[in-house]
Length: 113
Length: 114
Image 1: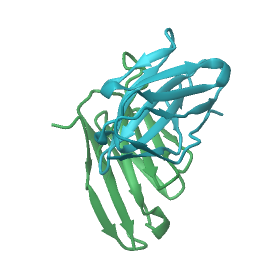
Image 2: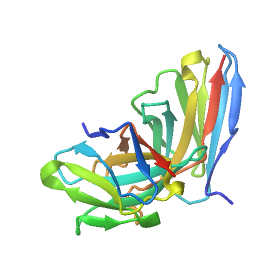
Image 3: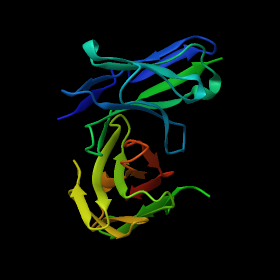
């Protein structure tokens, strides 16, 4: 069965600092991988996704993520965090063509002024 | 207008009551999902439907039922609500085709069972 681990429950960074949120997955073949963001009181919105090809994917709001098969990881990064990035971030994995995503428990990002 | 809508947005009910949460979508997607979100537990899948005649249990379906009334509508029912069903509930849709299983979420329904 597929599973997703987000090791960091809560991360605090200063505005303007770089950010990396970790995600590890468990699945045999190459999965479909996603990062979603949930702002307070909102539903989830897709930041970026990986299916195949270039292992570094660009998303919205200046985010990027890198797929590393050898480490079973799909970490999310941003070079310079803005106060508006404060939110909860979810990594998700989808068994190819199964149409069901398994979500990690989420990482809450706090941005200090 | 939002592509995925949920009604109600907030609901307070009492133990033992039957309650229905509704989801509608204008995206034309065949696939629809119901999740619940609890603090620290991420999203857990309750039920999902790949088309009008297809209903599948997710990982936490006990105490819930669903109805897919049309391609655009997917309702979640709590037959006899209990306090540990207090949570934030999300409906989502996806399309196997171009968007490759990306899910589009509604704004959520906050349910409190007293």
